[in-house]
Image 1 (cartoon, rainbow, N blue to C red):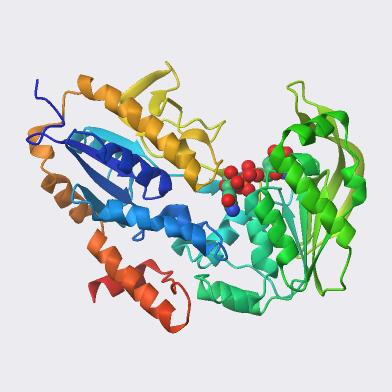
Image 2: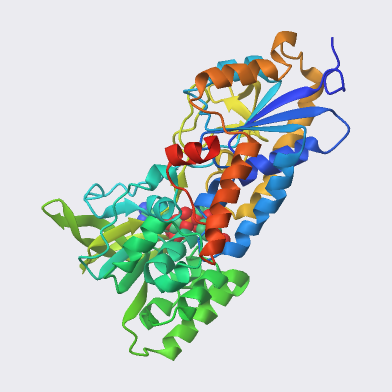
Length: 463
Ligand code: NAP
């Protein structure tokens, strides 16, 4: 049997998806003595996943992490194939014939539904698509968000995405205009008449998933008051215990109590943080959102040391012109790859993708990031997660037979992909597009001006 991972016979590995989890997997693969070649296959022309299209534009410093990913892209052992879709351009079975191992790093491209009536109404949208829209993700650039015929938006959910979209709606547009927020979103927000965002959590302030820096940012928005109801801060015994144990909850509690003490300044804009309400129905008129019917909750012991929300039957309607449901992302199934529909992820044991019917690993296929563990954690969370999967991959190297010789030169797959993709984007191509965006940004004192249309990206590269 040929020894794999030598200079004569390097291991060929495909990473599908160029987000943080994918890059941390490549970084881990390149460490060590084995000779490894990695191809990163990404459906968009642009790399960096949610760092480019998810991280809030007013959190630019977080995007500095791409410097690490750029170094990985520049490594001679790594090739970038942008604008290539796994599924339509190359199938899972084909990937298996060209690569010794395959890693899916595809993230969570969809959103969780609340499963309530009225979710389909015009003006009701997942926060994830609003995020994609303001961050210039090509798939969301044509989404329409009506921001100029009403004053109030309701955001459902208490995670950091809910915090991000609330800031985007109320921050001064002149400040946002110094970031890389997409130009179409800046224009939409400039015309916005929204003055109030109601952020609604189904459980209490102690159980909120957002973190303290994001909560503090609410209080730092100029011309915006933060309103909370002191009634929501009367805690049940389990919440009291959680507050004592959980440092983040404790810090959040202090900040929120500070907002209550601070009171109102008479600002024209406001954020209302409301706890213990669940949406029952989104109501509308002629197909457009006019409000959300909410039910008051109480917290009850869930039997696992935590609390869950239970409806009390008391309801009220919050009038609004837009509802953003921010209740979490969700992965989507890939053709030919197992998918756990209930949990919304690729089933795996230690990163090895498994067939759920018999719980055994399928052939040479692995998963990292949100597609592996679900949509939780910050960018850095992906590093140990990817290292863990790569540890499983390395343990499997001994038992690999190796793909056919004719398929492992690197030319064969490049030829196939060139014949399938309208235009492959290489790392050099990305550098060209990157320079174009940052040069345009420099002239406007912004980090970059994003190109948001795939055709335009490809034209710039071709020039
Ligand atoms: P998340 O943190 O999981 O929060 C989801 C929220 O939705 C929770 O408050 C949850 O409440 C609520 N929810 C779920 N189902 C609901 C329902 N049917 N009705 C009402 N509420 C419901 O998700 P996320 O905000 O999408 O963020 C995803 C991950 O990215 C998180 O780990 C987050 O920290 C991270 N992120 C970080 C940053 C940052 O660092 N600045 C920015 C954005 C995202 P329960 O707790 O009651 O389930």
